[in-house]
Length: 194
Image 1: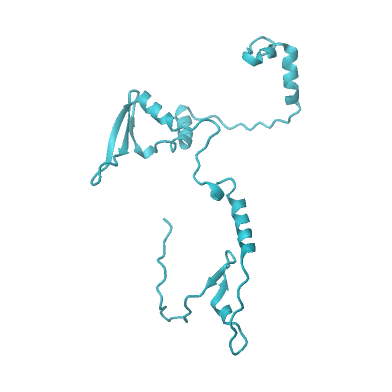
Image 2: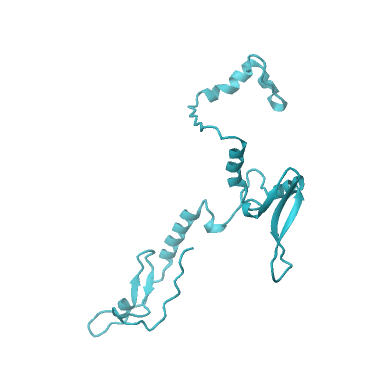
């Protein structure tokens, strides 16, 4: 395309119109081993929109809140927090350009991303930081005082403490009971995963 004059350059790149400059600019790229991975094409504009919507619909409004959309208006549900009792959900209709304008207000500029967790729970550093915190906490443990010894020479403290198989921390026995015996203390409520 450059040889037949179909490439146009503007601004700082005007110098690349010269064939020698263009060849010098591309020379380092020829040394790179390029691996091309091509997917089959999308199945039309509907498939493209469905694909992109999985990445964009959580930005400002979720799909289940959208009621209808045509070339003129977009209708969506919203919650009126001023109403204290009863049905707080209402439907708002906006002109399509106004809806798009409001939607784009919530889209972050290039290079920015939403943060769900900050500090040591931030996604990019979480694993390393938690591991480091565990190491520091382990080093910072103070030596435990000498446990009481009973008549048989065994420590009473050992009977009251066990090591957690998950984190290695100390577990304190609240109650010990035999099979079939009803515990005296009430177990914490069991929360099943939803």
